[in-house]
Structures are given as structure tokens and as C-alpha cells.
Image (cartoon, rainbow, N blue to C red; front, side, top):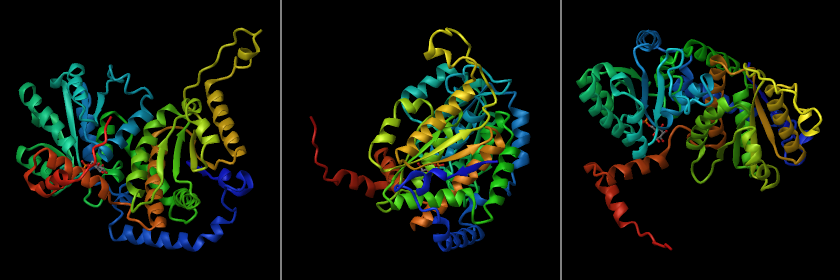
Length: 448
Ligand SMILES: O=P(O)(O)OC[C@H]1O[C@H](O)[C@H](O)[C@@H](O)[C@@H]1O
């Protein structure tokens, strides 16, 4: 069971930088208000992501399709960006192999290799053709809006290749809004197989919909367990003192104290993708109206040797959240050699599990001693159930934090403007006004 430990955020442990130990009492009224608002928004359908663990009309179809088709394909290429790829990428990385992006060269236990095309760098687009054989590749085209330029460009590029070398009807699956958007229309007219993203679930909250479930089902990941974990967390969140609300409230209280850099620091290589997924969720949801925390991802132990000096001794503008794992599942001993060298001898006979745990605890205690607020999510192990708990917890925490801050955690007006400018620059005729704005923008060109 996922636990959120906030001991080192309390004054008694951390000193004057911390929050008072009766912060829960003091904020009970506020928590109750937010809880009421969340329940109302769930009821009126605004927070559609809260239904995903319980309501999956396409679940059986996803499972059947994935189990029938996965042995057939050598490769899966996901064409999607942001919320349409980060979640599946994170789950895959967490449950399959921490080096998934390096080791994609081989099929894993008979399941397809997976590639996430989440950039339009021409090197990447062209480069994938050296690695996969188009004839043996299934494409998952994922876009909630169906309008994202990056995803549509990839779609056009690969569709042409498939038309020449394969069969688009067999090789392309579209995941998009059930009714509207160009991808839905194209799927209808071309007859592509589709799955739906519920209209009331925004991209970055969609990992537990077909957006995340379809790609990971193809890899043999237990999507029932993923949803069961999310359900279990949702049940825990029926009472006010739950990990999601407390995490959100604490981040909010520290934000008010000027700690506007929020660091997610997993001590597990496999969870780096989860920190990346959370980074989008937190940044796009909470960066609004001139306010908001800057989410940073770090990796234990790697970043002890890169970022920790700054966290420990730099400006007091950070709150750190470790993610720790009790059982890594795969333990490895450090051999006894060079017993006469004290610098090596003490390591021999320990496991790497012990070493990573010791390094995490050492960092935690050092940060606490230095007065740097730090909390932690404690995971028993890394499995589909725990990831489901974690995902739901952080999604709920994100909207809660947004409500504490008094902003809308569901929109992303800043990103939308950039998307419109891209379309204007690429010649989309409906975006003439944006084109004029770009042309008339009086920028000072200061260059050396
Ligand atoms: O799923 P799509 O509609 O293609 O959107 C993909 C991504 O586009 C933008 O960057 C949004 O800010 C993200 O929240 C979204 O996940």
C-alpha cells in the first residue's frame, strides 16, 4: 500500500522551515471545502479522470485486441505527445526495464518492442526507419484533440510508408475523442480501428483511459491490476485524511512559504518516467496566472552527485518528495574483495538494495539536518497495482492543489497559444490572425 510520509515537513523535525504539527487541524475547514468541491466536480462530470478506475466500457475489447494481436507485431510505435504518451511510457519503463529505451533492440518475452515518437526532430523520425521494419509494425495514433501538429505530422509520414509497404487497416489504431476532431473523422472514413478518450478527460489526466491502457496492454502489462490500484486509492480518498489531499495541501502550504520548486526524487531507475509524467501534470495544471510551482525531476542516487549540493545548500526555495521502494524485486550482492582496504571492505556482503536504501536515508537525514523540507512516497514494490495507486493519487493531488491555489487545474491556455502559432507558421489558413500577430510582434533582436 502506498504511503505518504510527511514527517520531515513538520517543524519539530525540520525546524523553522517546516509547517506546524497542527497544520491539519488548522486547515480542516479548507480541506473540507476542497473535498466538497471535488465531489461536486466529480458528480457534474468535470473531473472525468476520477471515473476511469471504475468505468471502462472498452476494457474487454482492449484486452482481447491486445492479447490477439500482440504476438503478431514485432514493433509498436506510439504517435502521441505530452499526455498522450508520457503515461504509457512511464508505466512501461516502471514495469519492464529501467533501460527500456536502450534495450528496445529485442522483443521482450514475445511481446512487441515499443517506441514512443514524442518529438518531431527529423533525426528521430528518419532514424526509426533504420530500426523497425514497417511491415511488422503497429501504429497507435493517440491524440485527444486529434489536432496536435506533431502527432498529425507523424501520422501522415508513417501512413504513407504503411500504404506503400503494408496494410493501413491492420496497422493503424486511432485513440481520440469519441465524437469530434479530425482524427475521429479520418478513422471513420478510412475504417481504422479506434478507441475513445472520454470527452471529459483531458490529455494529462488520461493515462488510465485507452490512451495509457492500450499501449501497455500490448506489452502484456496487467491493466486490471493497474485499475484495481487506482480504485483502491480512490476508496482511500473518500476520507479527508488521504495521501492525495495531504500531499496537495502540504505542497500548497510550502508554496505560500515561497518554496516554489517542487522536486520529485525517485530512488528507483524504473520510476524516472513516473517523475516525468508527474512533471507535465504538475506544470501544466498549476502554472497559471503568474503563479505556480516549478516541478523538477531528479533521480536517486544519480542526482546526489549532480543536484544535491544545490538542494542542500542553495536557495531555500525547494520542497523535495522522495519516492522510495521497499523491495526492488531483484537483489544483487556486492562481493567481498580487497578485505584489507577499509574503503572497499565495508561494502562487501551487502546488497545493492541495502546500498540504495542507505543512500536514500542518508540524503533524507542530511536534508532534514540542513532544514530542507522533504517528504516521501513509500512504495512496497513496483508493480501494476502500486502504479495505479500512485497515478490516481497524484492526479487527485494535482486538481486538489489547483483548487487550493484557486486556479483551474484542467486547462492549459499558454500551451494552446503556442499550438496556434505553430499552425499559423505552418500555413494553416484559419490562423491568419495568429500569423499577423507573429509578423507584427515588435521583438528587439539582440544578438551577438
Ligand atoms: O492529446 P493531444 O490533444 O494531442 O494533446 C497532446 C498534448 O498537447 C499539448 O501539449 C497539451 O498541453 C498537453 O496537455 C497534451 O497532452
